[in-house]
Length: 251
Image 1: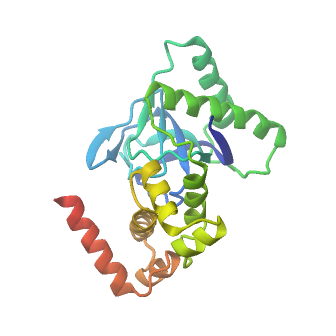
Image 2: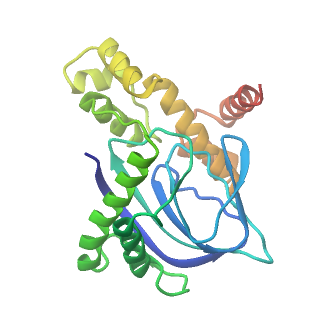
Image 3: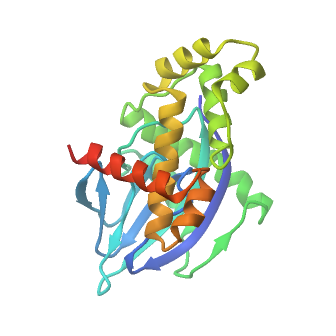
């Protein structure tokens, strides 16, 4: 059973041209009201469809581009989830054939997209609305997961380690420190993590830091700020890592 936490919800918004989301360690649920907007999914360009609901896992390389003459019109929430969704794919939910899910999506839109205004509601805004939104986002996310057979892990140790890594994006953290925290060995940590997420803790943390770096750079941040934000020792080390990552993804 999944558990949703840390939801931010947004009113209906219109976006033109490139839109870089730097808050990339959260998942997103998008409803597309209209507009001509493309996005990349694992290097392939795709088109957002009108009147459709999408799940965008935090590991997806999400970079939408909106037509200035017919801009993206959307509503969305972003949220954390336990256990985490490790998929790099973006999922579209077919909710029209299920009356209960269709009604849930309509209710979701009444909360986050009822008017065409640029609005943002933080976590502590209107507790009564948040008490509705939490189970609603949980239901929709579960539906995405079940309808697309998205694999999740129930390995508690691996999930705890992942949360530690996410909380230390901009700090030094070692497997030895994590192992001591949970009274186990580094080998157990690495095996558990790799069995659950098909990657090592170090490789995962490196990939996530580079993902954040690319989005920050695309949004106009300076190289030295980005290096510091993701705990790289200097800009040349970051530049080398980005070049190596680009070469790997182009092969």
